[in-house]
Image (tube, rainbow, N blue to C red; front, top):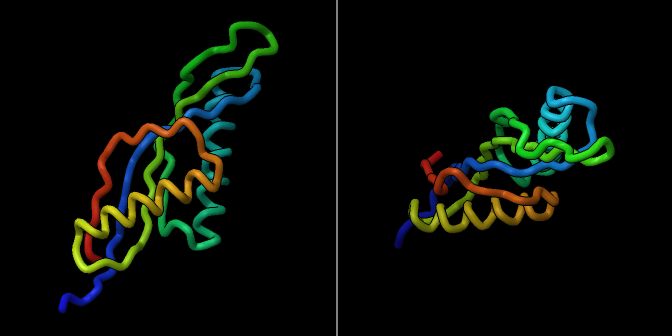
Length: 120
């Protein structure tokens, strides 16, 4: 009988953040701050184990004076799971990451890497 092992499962991606700001710089800064606050909250509640925000780029400029910016923000998220092997850990971890980001209302996610597991 296999023994359960603790694995760290990580995944990188981007999300789109839509907001009203005065310039490209403030839009990028605010989008980064918004995602940082969300990921900090998930860490505080124990949903995710670790995270990074990897920068932001303006995806869509406002079409008019009262239109919002859409900013792409890169991130990496890690969760800790228990499983009998790395393949099962990847499956459990990917679902945990998806669920955590969905509950936190992080939208328009595009993953840039497949989930990866390493034994803790």
